[in-house]
Image (tube, rainbow, N blue to C red; front, side, top):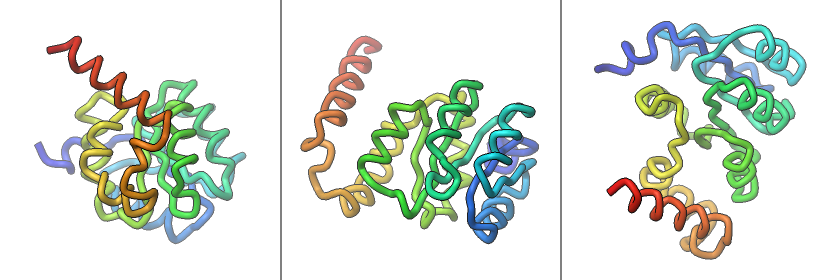
Length: 168
């Protein structure tokens, strides 16, 4: 099944304080219905009044973590898409607050396939797939042994292994 068909007519909310980037998201997802918000208050109104298949949030400039809490509380699969706040702490906070994925803005050309995986996964978190696919990218950003050094990620990996063992 093609991305075009999987994403066709999906209702997406994209939130970013950069209008050019919002336009780029909308162009990349031209098969979707994309609502765009450039600030926290507008995004909050959208979240409170519509149902979304996927929400894409920037962190900086739009109080993205507050919006992430709201989006997750509504049951919307939410992707954090960021550049300026691409850090280990932001990644951990996104995971803890319930984001299904964390995606670098510079990888925008891969956004369609990334959202396709979210649709195929029923909106469940894609952390293992993300770390497998983008591990080298994150290692360049956070250091080669970022998962082994950080207690949160060590626990995450251990829980993932235990869960995989339970399903074997």
